[in-house]
Image 1 (tube, rainbow, N blue to C red):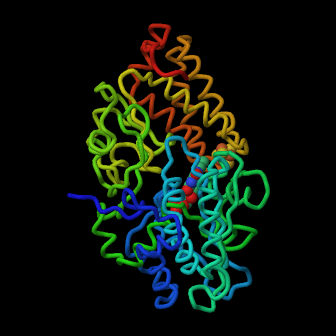
Image 2: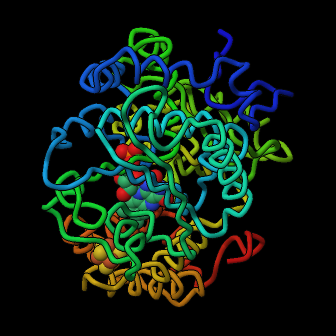
Image 3: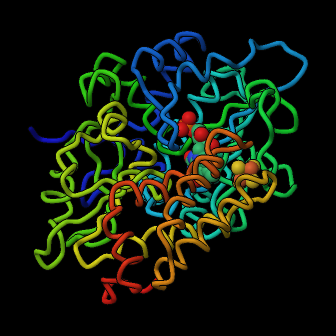
Length: 427
Ligand SMILES: Cc1cc2nc3c(=O)[nH]c(=O)nc-3n(C[C@H](O)[C@H](O)[C@H](O)COP(=O)(O)O)c2cc1C
Ligand code: SF4
């Protein structure tokens, strides 16, 4: 069945300019939502669509919005949009911001309306220079056209969209780390409760949503929750952007329904494994998510199927590895990332990420022991479910996931006293 795409413009179309986006029906959904729907009706429509957050955790978007207070409270409400996109293997939000900035901005306007926000703050990864420029131009065009600020879409509302640039720390993508950083402090996650809906940006009620998440919203308003639910699976609705990288012939971002088979994504859309080599391992949703082995390639890419397969959908960033790749080396590179990116507040995470890195380094160098494999498991166990944010869990899942799926290869490193795949990629 042909895939109906709606997040990215059709091939050859350039919708970056406001006029081009409007010619393609852009801002009709925002006009309708703001002029004809109550805020509650917008929340209900998004809830009914089954839209789940595309930032990694997969929480119901409509439900998250419904946690926000009713208007008239003592503090203003805000929408904080997460454009940090720092999870290795993940590069999908960038495609929306660069190629369809007005879809994203329209989503921010409708989402802001639904939660009665006074403004949206978009926290954008510092390295994303082009998306920042494209978005800045698009916002300036909106302002010039009178579509932001006071009298929003002919209503008595006031709303603005502001861009904030990060400075290259992964932890600033964690929602409360992002809020701290946006306020000008070190990006260290906050303890919850209170959750952002109660105490977010500058202590005010805040909803944090991912770029892709809000970009689905104009289409849900335009075509209805029932239409959205025809795409994907009953509990993982809509399309998503799968970013495919690693040992494939056509790495890239592919817009496909949730529930598409991993094999189809790799073989059909990404052109198969490079050089016709054998598939060995696949990380399905950014490096935080436990790795799958080649035998699991028939899994459907939706929340439930991946959970059953012992991993998670995460950001949908798929990293493909062929039979030249050393699994210890892959785990080591990922552990090095987490060791570098821990913010250091929690002992389990600060010490655990350093331990995992050291242990994997030792095993890869051929100096590891059987006891080291057991230590990876026990250190990982102490890191899960104990800390302020999920970075610690992610670091543990990644390392223990590789060990669980590819134990024989870890053991071979120990028994042979060397890496059995010396031609693997550079660590
Ligand atoms: C260490 C860490 C890094 C994260 N990085 C990002 C990120 O770069 N972008 C993002 O949207 N969500 C990221 N998240 C998830 C956010 O905390 C949050 O759940 C998400 O932005 C909510 O949006 P959603 O409900 O629309 O998915 C990260 C979480 C953790 C624990
Ligand atoms: S889990 Fe790690 S990254 Fe998260 S708050 Fe604790 S120390 Fe910082």
